[in-house]
Length: 166
Image (cartoon, rainbow, N blue to C red; front, side):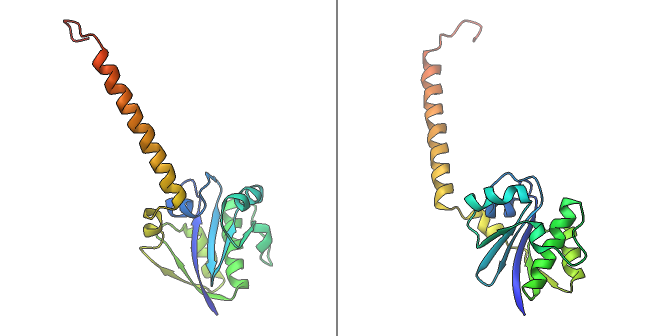
């Protein structure tokens, strides 16, 4: 049996998951690490885009991990069912999750007999640690803000003041 780490939910609303899947995906998705392999499960129309932008061993859709009883037509339920099935197929007996895991995922995972461990720090430190690309973007944004401030200060120096202060 093995252990896994799971971050799941809607990346556009979940900062920890968004850090792993830096895309404004509005549908449920999951980032799963088993041993040294990382798998992302997301809606089928997002799979190609995620493959291009996310470093993962595998990117799959819920259909790829369909349980014997099939998938529910509801996207959130189907994604949770497929995550549970993925963990089951990979002989996971315990999964560590963060504070933002939606209960629908926890419920489906528990239904297949997998224990859930909570880690209050999971995802938090990762979000606060910046990648080289994130640092480049921050530096560019700060430079642009600095240029804007200098421009505004120069502009204010040249404005004529009227007796009414305008």
